[in-house]
Structures are given as structure tokens and as C-alpha cells.
Image 1 (cartoon, rainbow, N blue to C red):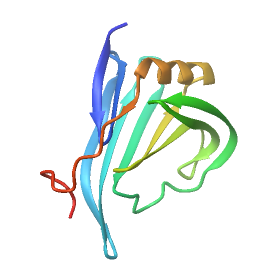
Image 2: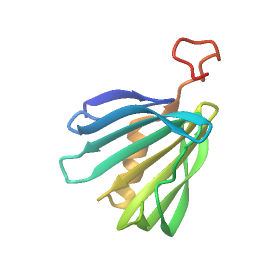
Image 3: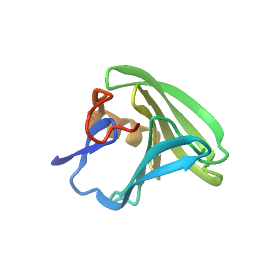
Length: 145
């Protein structure tokens, strides 16, 4: 299977080449005295599944809305032990989603898959080779003050 390499925020991963990027944005966000960068990408798969990645550096300044958990299980991603959370309500919308939360020295991220079976989402995680990009030094070009 042909894969396409993606680098978003502090994550690198590969998706099947037939996944289509539907939306992408990167923006500075300010709230009170805090400033962060929000990076968001959404892909669609040929089978109708959708995958979204929302990353915040250095920290999230708004939440994604209410969530109802229906299950969780451990996965190993990027050399780290994480958990996939299955939902019946995600981002305030009734929907089944498989959600993976990432914490990194540069920030946090949420990867959410909709329309997948559990086995399909687990297979995607294993195929993707998700890994973490080292945090840049504080004086790197483009670093937040």
C-alpha cells in the first residue's frame, strides 16, 4: 500500500495515499494573557471514514466540547503507551469516534477517527507509524515567545 508522509505540529505519520486532505489550518489563538498555535487537519478515506487531528502548542486554549466515553483500551504509539477512547458523544455531537490523546513537551493533540471499526482504527494506527518530533529549542525561528 502506498503511504503519504505527514508532519503536523509535533507528530509525523503516514496515511494511505488515497486519504484526501479536506481541510487544514494553522492559526495563533489568544485567550486572556495566553497565546498558542492551533493546527488542524481533516482527511477523508475512500470508505467514508474521517480522520481529524487537532494540535495545540504549547497548550490548548479551548476544549472540544462534551464527550461520553463508552470504552477504552491501551495502544503503543510512537514508543509510548497511550489509550484509545471510544465515544458515543464527541465534541458535543452524538457520534461514535475513536480518540487518541497525545501529550508532548511542545503541546497536546487529539486524533479522532469516525466511521472506523475498532479493528480498522487499530490497523490505521499501526500502519501510520506515528512518531513524535523533538521539541525545537526555545530560540528556534518561529518559536512562541
